[in-house]
Image (cartoon, rainbow, N blue to C red; front, side):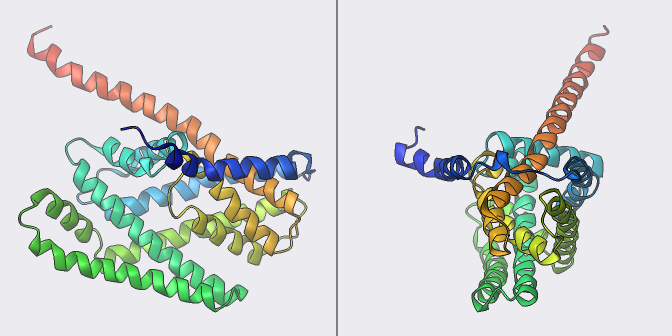
Length: 305
């Protein structure tokens, strides 16, 4: 189906605005400190060693009869590759499809349950940030509204499941999502989200030193909130444009020069996209090759060759 030109233009608007900002601010002329290579390397290592495993663990909590953790982690990384290449929420569908055969609907429903718990964790993060950094009443109200909307959606889902007998597939998917959203599982997923974001605060503080910014937990916390609020709705491949907008706005609000903020946001984003894309491509090729060998072996054995 061919999309109308105005829809394509609207979806590309964040990337176009990013291009305009880069052209005006020229972040490539910003001088980095001598610790910049160390900060970039440490950030990449923390992303692979801490943040991504916690992200995979969070999804595994939501999964029904989950496979081994290594398979969940591999599918999670492959989903990030799809998000970087395609965007628009494709990563969730790809990781559910690549996890295991025959359970796409159930695993995708569990993915939505995980996303719901992540939004609840984001509401908690915004609420705490609003209290600590004095963001104002609006931020507090928004966080409470998001948490209330999440609770209302769970209640509406439990109300609808018994009434969807005429649509068994929809009922099964919704039931799976609700099964993955029990209070115990939601609590675990929220805790893992907050723990993962704690590791990201460390990364953000490391980057502050690389850009001659005084280390500040307040700045790191607001940058984290800005990034997650900006990418809450999946858009362009890799969330380019929206990611930089959220990070830059938070950094400028904390007193960082605008050109420094733009450079910080772009380089920090690239340290999360490029290494993950390289590793994810390797994982995808290795798993695809392994699956092909597994599928051809029974055929050869059955014919006696």
